[in-house]
Length: 215
Image 1 (cartoon, helix red, strand yellow):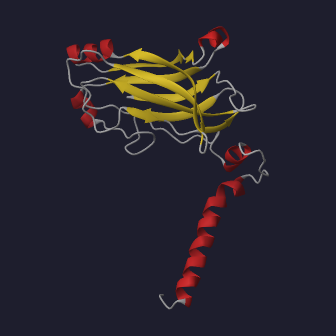
Image 2: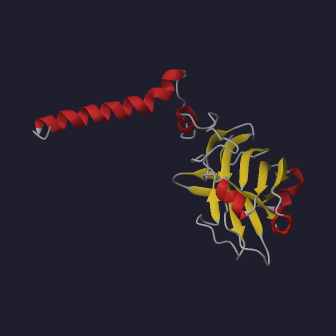
Image 3: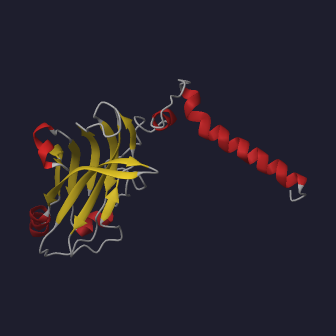
């Protein structure tokens, strides 16, 4: 299991910001878990200071020992709904020694949180490239993992550690600012807009059904 806490030093890809997303891709032939080898965080929209926050869990259960090789690739992207993802950088983390240690002495390992540096997509930018992910690694025996299950992302069960959706980069104003226009600061009311829209839709649907004699 990994918990991706956040990222720092993320360069601006579009204008003065990036919509930051991180993916992990497990390369291990002995992986027999129910989750896809490629997993991704949600998106931190309109990151302008290079600091993105996630608090997002990646889960890879049922790695059968012994393993010939076992590594995970972390990749950093600028993400857009229409244009797709723009690759920023990546690095590979070798997991073999950690899973072998746990398999040998049946003692779980927790590493981090620690900052791991990305390598840029363009090698010529390596000298000035400072993007890093802050991540924790949890390696458990399968018996312990079965007794302490955790969901992907922030899904339940979610208590070891408990992960809460950040407010930074997730509000309507952050998303809309990527289209080139701002959003008035209505404080708490701004967060209630999705609920208001849903209530209006429900009301309109109820009126329409009454007119049709269905309710």
